[in-house]
Length: 415
Image 1 (cartoon, rainbow, N blue to C red):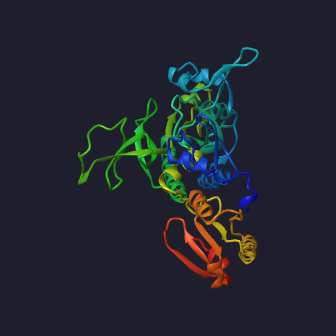
Image 2 (cartoon, helix red, strand yellow):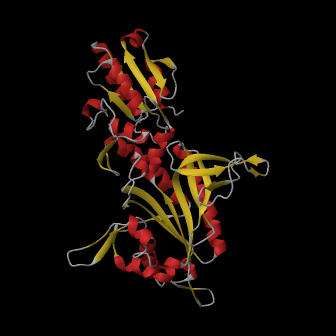
Image 3 (cartoon, one colour):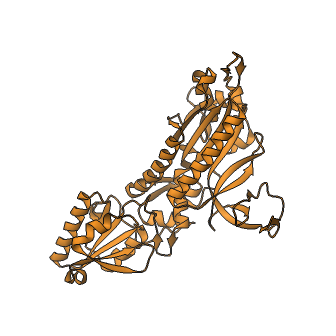
């Protein structure tokens, strides 16, 4: 992609009302556009990042046996009333509820337990149908009273929610533990250092588990020990900083929740009257669990944990492009060499953003830092004197000259 032809260009100034690093850099860089508080458009550059995040999640969900589907975001009230949640005060505070033109009540989905339970009633008939797991990646809606922090707390957001169904607790526990490992693999691939944190299980179970990334931008407080053998959300923690857990000292830090998994028991399946025939021909109610990751929130978290005062530092796996190519100077030979390299990189399958604009070196370098693409390659009169280009990694101050003849092979390598 040539930056001169891009639908969006980096803005000269960050938005005045940005309250977080991810909001400031993603909007200024042309990754996002804010429509209203907690409501964003993903612009072409941002959508490239988002789709890479989504694909990593999809690959790991498929690997653990998840089957992808898509459920409606618009829900009639009936299944929510059957589970008792439609009139629940806590649900009403966050769910958009309204009536259609005929007076029938509807809501916008912020989670899908009731809907998947109703679907399960049609397709779970026998013990042979279990275990099973299905997931979707979909926009969800939450009447968030404190929409803030860019992609970290929105009113419309994208969520991967997987639901699993099991014959018994043993089968659920095996899958649940496997999902913890799958989630940790996802975060590792995204370049996020996620901790498994015990959280309140509410009415369903003693504990649920959250996945938290330590950051000053976080809203949660996590109590933990350095060996990672203990980590709890403040809502269930009993104690104080400095307490001992074995030989380890309890510490506390702010963190961003990037996922959660939850054993739900039989509540939603009982409400939907879901049963199956066991091996003895007896009717049983399956056990259910849910597993959530916000791809859009993960994208915001990556920015919060991987940036400097100049802009974003995208991990290789999710960067919109792998190479940011700049031409510096007015000489036709510079433009010709940059165009040739751009074409060769494209033919070699390298994702490259070429800043071919008629702007100063300062503007181009500043925008490159802001956009955060892993490798910056500069063609200038000085580099051409040595038949070379200058290579700089976004997360390093060091530069190196590489011969033009070796540039494509060098830039095809991942770090």
